[in-house]
Length: 216
Image (cartoon, rainbow, N blue to C red):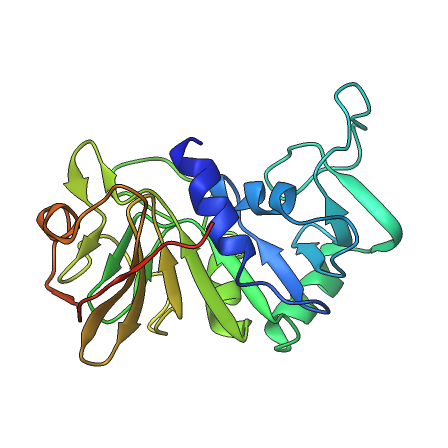
């Protein structure tokens, strides 16, 4: 199993029947592939759909049925499409149970930076600010490091997406829960040890042994 699949499978275990769930662009979209089609989990995309799923078979892609990142999707029976104004009404109105977002950095108390690297050209924040603020639960799905540098840091050096603390972080190495006291280590990925994770994390992890292994 590759690292991104591991992350997506672990995140999928956090979802419950009846949940309305937004998946951010990139790695988070893989979560839809890890959920059975009869799970009664309803995926929403800010470009205007509730009931999206991964494409069932190669060759069945439709040009006008995509997620917010422009990637082809399929739709469950009973799904609904609507304009982006309605979609953001769901987000800003607090109707999302969960959002799963990628991250560039998360600081020790769970503030997320995921939309801009200074000096790079970006089209804008998109829905990230609204999603972190409006969803009942925010899960960050990301790789633990980038080019060997920690993405979980003492303090974000990139522009924050929101001041709100995210609820859970799932990486290829660990599952962590940010708190007011710092970053709590909940689970270790298969084959990964505490010393390794701490060495690749830019803030002190709060860990009480024995530490559970990541459920996949």
